[in-house]
Image (cartoon, rainbow, N blue to C red; front, side, top):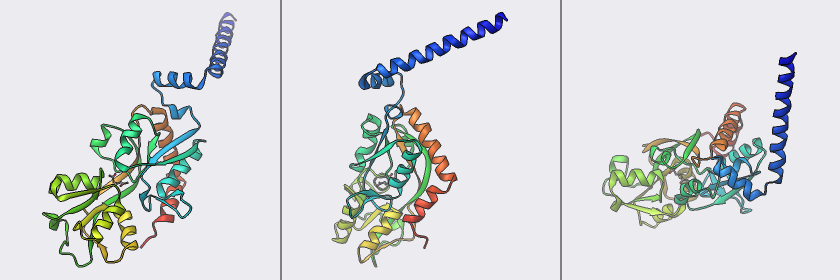
Length: 268
Ligand code: GLN
């Protein structure tokens, strides 16, 4: 009987403590709560009802602006499905590709989805979710170019999107002096069309879109590199990391991810 009483008292005390906690939380102002969350090492996104995604919206079919000026594409739709699962509102910020990782690491956005390749170097700065798609670095050339395979890139002027893996690999393999950086893929392709560069190294799906939208260009059959795409988060965003990976797993299992990809990438 004594044991029961002790247990009863313990439960009551616990309940009192819990309800106390809730009241304090309600009274705490938003900024105080944010500071507390930060000092406790948790992420602000876990407490807010909004998720802010950073991307570079000139990377079709992963992210691009539609006729109404809205950012759409595979990443935008997967992000919307994740946000819905987590009961949060999604906001998408269009930024320069090479400022995305600094922005997420610094906390001004909650996560990056940008057809972003997982690399060991980037892992030093951010955490990557499970992967949700595969990308291939390919080479776009003018039709009939003397560049036929990767081996022919030596000594050629290569156009890339600044800060991308295409940029990093080409700079490593062929030297900085042979690589011309552009703010986005469309500008690199425009430079290829007017002869400023001999080829463009970029991810395969955007490459297909660019080649379709421009006459006189083709994609070489040889693949430069095969990569995994994932969502990047700040190292501190441990709760959101778990939430996003959980949502991704469910969206993979129930076929949502495949459906979204199939909507934008038609099987050949
Ligand atoms: N997959 C490439 C990278 O992560 C390019 C991504 C992009 O241009 N949006 O570097």
